[in-house]
Image 1 (cartoon, rainbow, N blue to C red):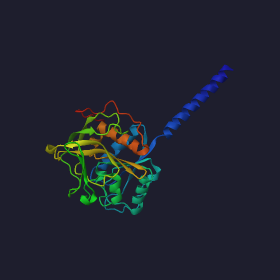
Image 2: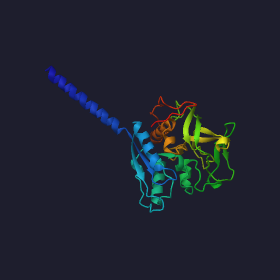
Image 3: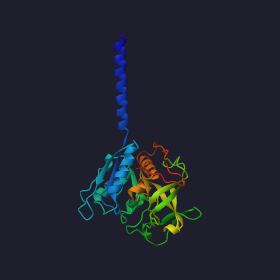
Image 4: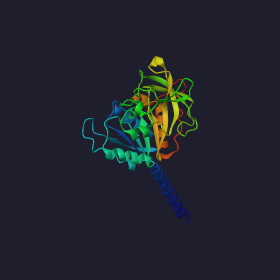
Length: 295
């Protein structure tokens, strides 16, 4: 009798364990990375982002690669609605009107969208995309795209309506990221200052900047080709019912292997998908004056 009871209890335990494992697997968020065209090496950076998201244990990841530039792109129709968050590593030609509207409907309807580095260069003449990402550079952007947005030398938020093109950067270098909002789910628990690996420090970003929060900035030193101002480095934007996470960091694979970038990307993607963050700040997070990267 006792053996039979033990067998029954063991069976129930194993079933519960398997059911729990299945439930945990089902709880993973579905992420989609967009690439295929970029003036940066998307073939080396997409795998780094895919690995970072998967290694967090929070995501499954698919990739939607467009046809090369100059080819017919009308058939590029990623199934945005099937995912919890869409991560853009794309900077290239305009999509079909159908695909563009599908992205707008997805995000405004409550989907998560993540903009990484040169993805903010894309679609300079697409008004709603500019509104969705908050700020952008290059791509024909100018004063008609919206103001320059930055923190001045007194760390005061400025919306500068001056004329001029959007987008600039000096030579690649390590630079410090300064957290400006310590209470946002993405940055909560991060050191106030941490050193990012070699990267392009984007400046002169401009755009509508509506419903946008700047979570962190970096000082663009004149001796490094900057303008002596604090440039936005981590941003969030509300777009309809959706959440957009935007980081100008991530020029190359070595930039993305920075633990600060990895943490920013994974936590930002989770927030964009759910509005919450459960991914912890790792023990190997960069220090105030120390870069830490992973292979």
